[in-house]
Length: 105
Ligand SMILES: Cc1cc2nc3c(=O)[nH]c(=O)nc-3n(C[C@H](O)[C@H](O)[C@H](O)COP(=O)(O)OP(=O)(O)OC[C@H]3O[C@@H](n4cnc5c(N)ncnc54)[C@H](O)[C@@H]3O)c2cc1C
Image (cartoon, rainbow, N blue to C red; front, side, top):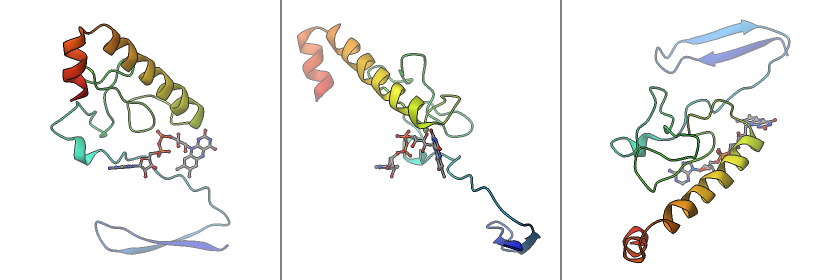
C-alpha cells in the first residue's frame, strides 16, 4: 500500500494521503434516526440508558453499541443485553396482571 484515496461526502472533494498501512475503525454513528421523538438520545444519537438499561420511556430497555454505554465491545454488548432482558423481566413482574396485559399490547 502506498496511499489512501477518499472522497469527502460533504465537499465531494477527493483526497490522497500517502501511507504504508491502515487500521479501519467504523461504526461510530448509531443507526437511531428512527427513534428520534421517542426515547431520549444523546447529542451523538446514542440511546440514553441508566445502569439497568432503562430508557427514558418506562418499560423500554436498550443495550449495546447504540446506547450511551461507554465502551463499544462485543462482551459489553452481550452482557448489557442480558442485563436489559433481566430489567424487562423485573419491570414486568412488578406490574399488576392487567398492566402486564396492557404492556404486551
Ligand atoms: C470493524 C469493527 C471491528 C470490531 N472489532 C471488535 C473486536 O475485535 N472486539 C470486540 O469486542 N468488539 C469489536 N467491535 C465492536 C462489536 O462489533 C460491537 O461492540 C458489537 O457488535 C455490538 O453489538 P450490538 O448488538 O450492540 O450491535 P450490532 O452487532 O451492530 O448489531 C445491531 C444489529 O441491528 C441491525 N439493525 C440496525 N438498524 C436496524 C433497524 N432499523 N431495524 C432492524 N435491525 C437494525 C444491524 O443490521 C445489526 O445486525 C468491532 C466493530 C467494528 C465495526
